[in-house]
Length: 363
Image 1 (cartoon, one colour):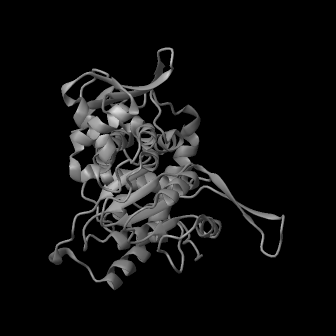
Image 2: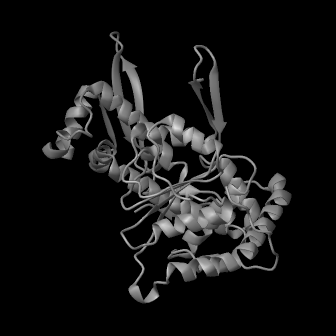
């Protein structure tokens, strides 16, 4: 770890934007909200996921956030190969930044879920038969990669997604000049963030949201801090839009969820066994997808995939239920459309224009 600078008051949060390749105001609001969450003394912490083609400054973006919040001589790392290495890294740093991620295996996706909300890991102590070493941590995480690397709904529900655009050649800056300018501004940037943290500590006991998302503590904290930087409701509007886009992206990345959505486009209800549904979805997805490695190979595997996708499908108006019917207690799957339009209804902070129920388009 490296030393943090002495904070200096009088800075502007907009200065940070000149060092980050963000395209929209909403994206910048989410970056700052994530940074404010990192400065809190406890989780849960959202994962910030950066994607974009080569030349979009994903690694520089990650390194600047790490340098601002948790400076380290090796700010960016490759993904670890096992749980133990991930929790050891969490024990020796506050922010974990993983660079050039090409894909997330299922096990590391599950471990990151535990790490962002707080979880433990136990291993046998070396040179001992019965003693354990326990790792318990909650840490902010940065992931960056060219592709859409987060495809599992449980991790996507804990994440903030940003897509970076490639930087034109006429706008590129030498890395030495960029870091020199950042180091000059770093004390003031830290100062303005800490002023917002102080505001959040004062406002948090009185902060309420009419509807709580999965990352409820993060949403409450960012809402409590935001009036030090922006008008009330700014964070909620940006966060809701980001979550809606994440739902659509995860469904598209999951062939089973995408096939269920296509199946229900022309009907309001489907009932049958898992075997019946596997055949109907295979017909909907096509032979090439149904024979791929990502397609469930049995009715039981399909049921597990449906349970994992059910939360995000429900957000687009498709409800999945598992029932038993008849004297034989046959397991049945019932899929229904809820009759809601293709949108998600959000509630913001009470007492503000953004606090009224809002409809955010999904498609």
